[in-house]
Image 1 (cartoon, rainbow, N blue to C red):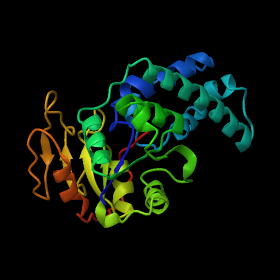
Image 2 (image 1 turned 120 degrees about the vertical axis):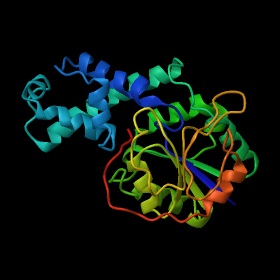
Image 3 (image 1 turned 180 degrees about the vertical axis):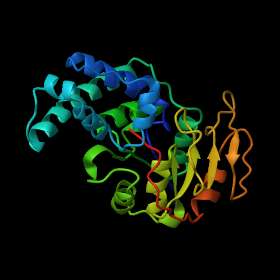
Length: 270
């Protein structure tokens, strides 16, 4: 039985620019912090895996540190960041519920077809679990989303590009890596999947198109929809040659490809 594991941000929906970034900035405003991230700032911060990890960086600014109540110990700093992140997650899930972030082309089609054919489908992400579940429900509907296992947030101590979240998914779902396939959008995500021995399709997103995806089995602009956006092939080292859309037959062929890990930390996910 083939398994299909999706990243969330940039894969299920193009969430970074239209969801996470405004949610972070709204949180800064809510807590009276003298910082706002631009589109360009946030693109650089995406090289850091995890939202809380990105928030930690603003405490390096003395003005932000004072506005946060001058947390003196590591525990105090961690609690401040956790409070900000809970507020940011609430704002983000509200945006998703409002329909601000539509699913990426082909996501609903591929997940629906895969489940119908008895494939295992899961999601593995560095984002907070409530955020991931909100995006997943927005992409495939509440009923289908409730049947899909989610591995997210602090479920592992080390975030992408570390392979821990994919290793956990393989272990918990008793999956065979040689019959499993990951869909990612960033270099950090690709390295995490490859590090777990998983073949990976990359569907590039707004922030990641120019990243290095040398180890990917296939790089495309999206999964494609027959009645909507057609995919563009950017790299096809395994000779799948998809036309317009990626279907289950294409994905099954890719599931057995064997990636090779390379040490790197470029790219990111939220």
